[in-house]
Image 1 (spheres, rainbow, N blue to C red):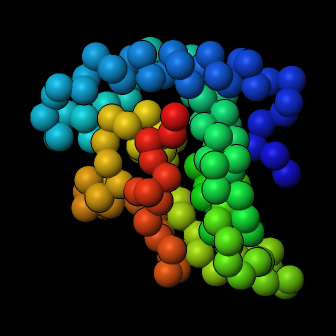
Image 2 (image 1 turned 135 degrees about the vertical axis):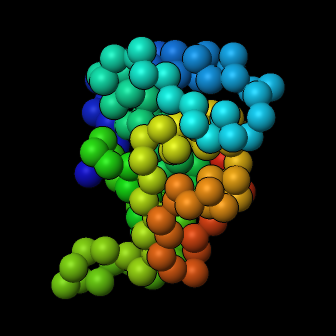
Length: 138
Protein backbone atom coordinates (compact mmCIF):
# COMPACT_ATOMS: atom_id res chain seq x y z
CA UNK A 1 0.00 0.00 0.00
CA UNK A 2 1.29 3.46 -0.87
CA UNK A 3 2.22 5.85 1.92
CA UNK A 4 0.07 8.59 0.39
CA UNK A 5 -2.79 8.72 -2.08
CA UNK A 6 -1.90 10.26 -5.41
CA UNK A 7 -4.51 13.00 -5.01
CA UNK A 8 -2.90 13.99 -1.66
CA UNK A 9 0.67 14.46 -2.91
CA UNK A 10 0.37 18.24 -3.25
CA UNK A 11 -1.15 18.44 0.26
CA UNK A 12 1.69 16.30 1.56
CA UNK A 13 4.30 18.46 -0.13
CA UNK A 14 2.78 21.58 1.45
CA UNK A 15 2.59 19.90 4.86
CA UNK A 16 6.24 18.80 4.77
CA UNK A 17 7.24 22.29 3.67
CA UNK A 18 5.29 23.74 6.59
CA UNK A 19 6.99 21.35 9.03
CA UNK A 20 10.41 22.14 7.51
CA UNK A 21 9.84 25.89 7.87
CA UNK A 22 8.96 25.43 11.53
CA UNK A 23 12.15 23.39 11.99
CA UNK A 24 14.36 25.93 10.18
CA UNK A 25 14.05 28.39 13.05
CA UNK A 26 15.71 25.83 15.36
CA UNK A 27 18.71 24.78 13.26
CA UNK A 28 21.25 26.77 15.27
CA UNK A 29 20.08 25.46 18.64
CA UNK A 30 22.08 22.98 20.74
CA UNK A 31 21.55 19.29 20.03
CA UNK A 32 19.46 18.77 23.18
CA UNK A 33 16.97 21.40 22.02
CA UNK A 34 16.84 20.05 18.45
CA UNK A 35 16.18 16.53 19.78
CA UNK A 36 13.14 17.89 21.61
CA UNK A 37 11.77 20.00 18.74
CA UNK A 38 8.19 19.21 17.90
CA UNK A 39 5.95 21.94 16.41
CA UNK A 40 2.85 21.14 18.44
CA UNK A 41 1.03 24.14 17.01
CA UNK A 42 0.69 22.38 13.64
CA UNK A 43 -2.61 20.56 13.14
CA UNK A 44 -2.69 16.76 13.34
CA UNK A 45 -3.62 16.55 9.65
CA UNK A 46 -0.50 18.53 8.72
CA UNK A 47 1.64 16.08 10.69
CA UNK A 48 -0.04 13.11 9.02
CA UNK A 49 0.41 14.50 5.52
CA UNK A 50 4.04 15.49 6.20
CA UNK A 51 4.83 11.97 7.40
CA UNK A 52 3.04 10.29 4.51
CA UNK A 53 4.65 12.52 1.89
CA UNK A 54 8.13 12.13 3.37
CA UNK A 55 7.72 8.33 3.41
CA UNK A 56 6.63 8.56 -0.22
CA UNK A 57 9.87 10.46 -0.99
CA UNK A 58 11.93 7.85 0.87
CA UNK A 59 10.21 5.01 -0.98
CA UNK A 60 10.98 6.66 -4.33
CA UNK A 61 14.57 7.36 -3.32
CA UNK A 62 15.33 3.79 -2.25
CA UNK A 63 12.74 1.34 -3.61
CA UNK A 64 12.81 -2.29 -2.61
CA UNK A 65 11.31 -4.89 -0.29
CA UNK A 66 14.13 -5.31 2.24
CA UNK A 67 13.55 -2.81 5.06
CA UNK A 68 10.26 -1.68 6.53
CA UNK A 69 10.20 1.87 7.91
CA UNK A 70 7.27 2.49 10.25
CA UNK A 71 6.14 5.90 11.45
CA UNK A 72 3.08 5.17 13.54
CA UNK A 73 0.28 5.97 13.35
CA UNK A 74 0.55 7.46 9.87
CA UNK A 75 2.51 5.25 7.58
CA UNK A 76 4.97 2.53 6.71
CA UNK A 77 6.95 1.79 3.57
CA UNK A 78 9.29 -0.92 2.38
CA UNK A 79 12.60 0.26 0.95
CA UNK A 80 16.03 -0.96 -0.15
CA UNK A 81 17.02 -4.16 -1.87
CA UNK A 82 17.29 -7.29 0.15
CA UNK A 83 15.23 -10.24 1.26
CA UNK A 84 11.50 -9.66 0.94
CA UNK A 85 8.94 -10.29 3.63
CA UNK A 86 8.47 -13.71 5.13
CA UNK A 87 5.29 -14.99 3.44
CA UNK A 88 3.88 -16.00 6.82
CA UNK A 89 4.07 -12.68 8.62
CA UNK A 90 4.69 -10.16 5.79
CA UNK A 91 7.43 -8.39 7.77
CA UNK A 92 10.88 -8.03 6.21
CA UNK A 93 13.93 -9.05 8.25
CA UNK A 94 14.85 -5.39 8.84
CA UNK A 95 12.38 -3.09 10.58
CA UNK A 96 12.86 0.52 11.68
CA UNK A 97 10.29 2.27 13.87
CA UNK A 98 10.23 5.99 14.61
CA UNK A 99 7.86 8.45 16.20
CA UNK A 100 6.55 11.12 13.81
CA UNK A 101 8.55 13.96 15.35
CA UNK A 102 11.79 11.94 15.20
CA UNK A 103 11.13 10.93 11.59
CA UNK A 104 10.34 14.47 10.48
CA UNK A 105 13.39 15.93 12.24
CA UNK A 106 15.51 13.41 10.32
CA UNK A 107 13.68 13.88 7.02
CA UNK A 108 14.08 17.65 7.26
CA UNK A 109 17.73 17.51 8.37
CA UNK A 110 17.20 19.07 11.79
CA UNK A 111 18.95 16.10 13.41
CA UNK A 112 21.15 13.29 12.16
CA UNK A 113 20.55 9.55 12.35
CA UNK A 114 23.35 8.91 14.85
CA UNK A 115 22.12 11.74 17.11
CA UNK A 116 18.59 10.31 17.29
CA UNK A 117 19.91 6.73 17.61
CA UNK A 118 22.30 7.69 20.44
CA UNK A 119 19.40 9.45 22.20
CA UNK A 120 17.40 6.20 22.05
CA UNK A 121 14.76 7.60 19.71
CA UNK A 122 15.07 4.94 16.97
CA UNK A 123 14.04 1.30 17.20
CA UNK A 124 15.84 -0.69 14.52
CA UNK A 125 16.09 -4.45 14.05
CA UNK A 126 18.22 -6.10 11.40
CA UNK A 127 21.46 -5.62 9.56
CA UNK A 128 20.33 -2.52 7.67
CA UNK A 129 19.40 -0.37 10.64
CA UNK A 130 20.99 2.88 9.48
CA UNK A 131 19.25 5.22 7.04
CA UNK A 132 21.78 8.04 7.39
CA UNK A 133 22.86 7.73 3.74
CA UNK A 134 19.27 8.45 2.65
CA UNK A 135 18.59 11.41 4.95
CA UNK A 136 17.75 14.22 4.92
CA UNK A 137 15.23 13.95 2.11
CA UNK A 138 15.50 16.53 -0.65
